[in-house]
Image 1: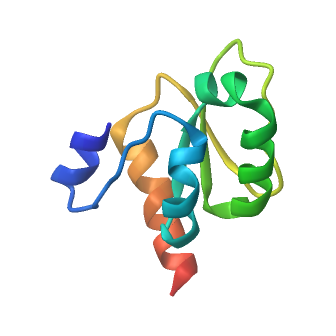
Image 2: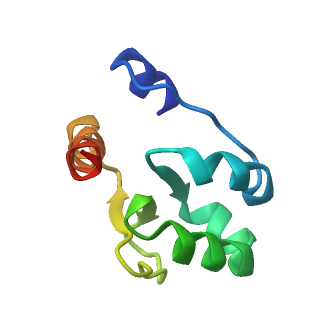
Length: 96
């Protein structure tokens, strides 16, 4: 996914833990979280999702019981590239 976003001209950073991503998420246009890391670090994920609000994009599988927090955008896997780019472009427009 990072490669596909970079091809479209979006700079990306990837992290293995929420703790590692926390500082970068404070200045990023958006933070994309996979439901696997949310399940692995539920307390940290809840805090981060609440802080990010509409700047969070949560990727979930069709069986996930995870729910969005506040204004979090949820994309159900598998999703298409245009789906993700549409969400990111909407965030860019909202930030203007």
